[in-house]
Image (tube, rainbow, N blue to C red; front, top):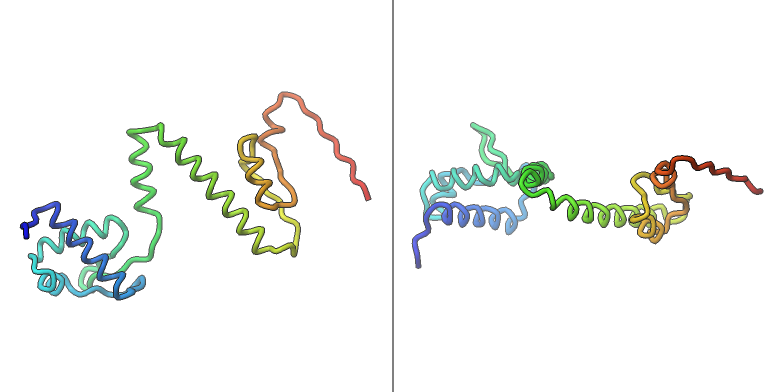
Length: 165
């Protein structure tokens, strides 16, 4: 067995703490054992545990409440969005990939909304619909699609609709 050093040790401790949370099915707000107990259970120094806890806190996995302990944190996208926006500073070409993922997620969300509504009312999709996205939106099963992005992109376009009974 090889002796782990920082950062490998810190990473291994983080993994053990995450495993502890998932195996015990801890929920947001549930307390973890104190640093001293974690250190003893893992056979590492309290300083190594503290370093791993700080890393998990920066990832949004745990929350340290000084004087109260370490608690599982409610999941949110704050740390992901912060990392993403920071990463885009260095590689702006990734924006295209992110926008594609957004389109897939939006289409999936529209489809789920249509299923939930289940024909009880008419559904209109609106906003950010253009030539590239209109087909995927239509395939979601909506009744109407508002395509302002298409009509507003032309210099002069008059559309007249006649209501038929």
